[in-house]
Length: 140
Image (cartoon, rainbow, N blue to C red; front, side):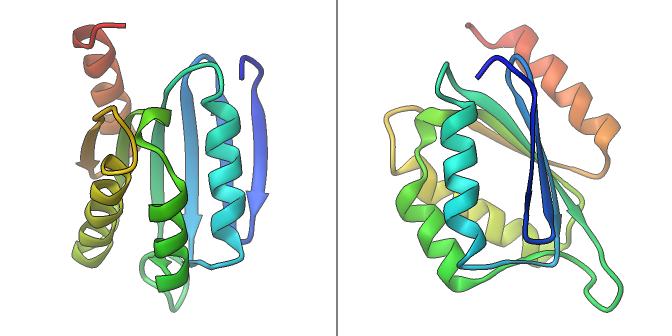
């Protein structure tokens, strides 16, 4: 995909920034109903080649950090492909979110031929610096 795009899936926002960054804001639960839409969007934006996915885990009132339902986690693990990604950056979140994200990325890595890097950072500025460094040192 070479054009910008924006999607709302449940409480979550996804925005594609050409040439290769999918910015996502996760609020609350990612549900079983959300998961197929996420997979379709990632597949669409990576059709022309792998992308970076930045996941901003946003706290909500009475819901400190996002969560991934078991059904959504299973769907994403079964239907995502590591070949779609150059890397994933998770911004914020607590220990539980980081453990869940790491487990999901391991499942994705088993789904394709390509490996991708995963990074956990505290803020968007650190995410942007990681993306810049990764681009500078990764063969295209």
